[in-house]
Length: 243
Image (cartoon, rainbow, N blue to C red; front, side):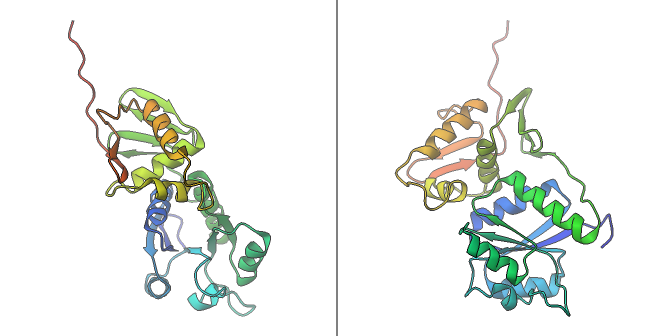
């Protein structure tokens, strides 16, 4: 692998919301990501695209997923590095993933920062190259800094909590669709969280307040009644009164 070569990533994830967020987050490094939602689609990408890294949802299949994908490591063969994902955070599940040959494993939900850090560390360890980190990139008229958890909107500099940053990434990565409260809850808090909780609405309000996003005149986050929320990547600055 050449030091200036983009790092190709194949991700096997059947949840489009999470897949889009993963791909969006890896834009901070020199990663090119392709998402597969089925095992056959992942096998095709692994064979035809020859990626440098695989990100695999280990909850697929019958427990021998690495073998099904042709990624199982043996004394005779070392396959490409794999970052495993799982919703089951117990020790047995993690040990089983390592026994199958993953290089690292993360529990879903995960933070954008941790995903990016682990992908960079695995790449550095396996290929002895350090992918350049682009801490800041532009989304419409928002400039997001993952390293310092800062967002610039116009001339304003906004500091986010880790959860607010993850919420913003989730919405921005899926700007072409309406994201329901249930999807947000599942992606950021996990399926075991109490579904009657208003935690999503409270965090949306907090993020809107920091972005100076009045729900009646939305600048970044639109409420779609009865469906959820949608991110709009551009905004219009409020009119100022001339003296």
